[in-house]
Image (cartoon, rainbow, N blue to C red; front, top):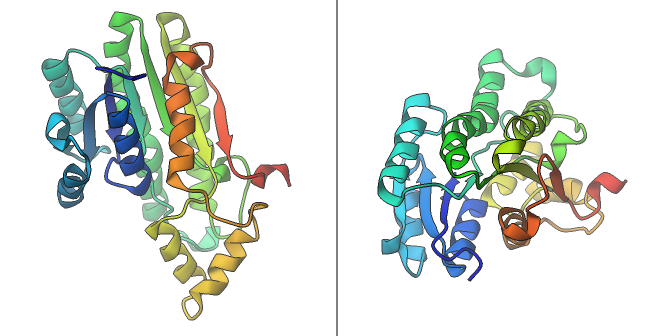
Length: 255
């Protein structure tokens, strides 16, 4: 098992991607620390994992500085270290023209998608630097590489996250800690179903057709297809890879 007894912390763990990652890393022998602000969904995740009782589940708001510090400290107290940190927290935010977005909603998307990654990095990286070993992964989006009408908030924070990732990677490159990002295309999820309905409330299927029209492969990305890339980047096989954006977009950015 590639991650036998490695401490893997996943934030946003109860989401579609977080759940898929939790199951995959558990199969590889990892000791899981799973964070999500939705306690009910965390409880559901615990029931889905074959060895859920062996994992640590912590309900917390990853946008809150104090709460992030507390769950990082708790992890170190219980398990001694953090080998891998994956931040899956993210929302699309308002889907409308940029001029119609309030500053409140723009900041909400920024705090959810960027500040969470910053805070998790801030408190986890010193733990990893003490052992001169560790891997941090952020989940951005293909909209961090291109623009798209009505998605200006999501595109803005996705670009920002990739910028932070590059600088953060260079900050700790000599201390044995690697920092990378996965950049997925739209993923099959309830969140995408909501986006389809927002685009065309009277005909969500039309919304799906419009989004799939952007994807050369003609289908949504599956969460399991992202987990394999994450597994590779978190492993020793990727020991010379840091500061990179690993694109998983079915050819979307090739157009």
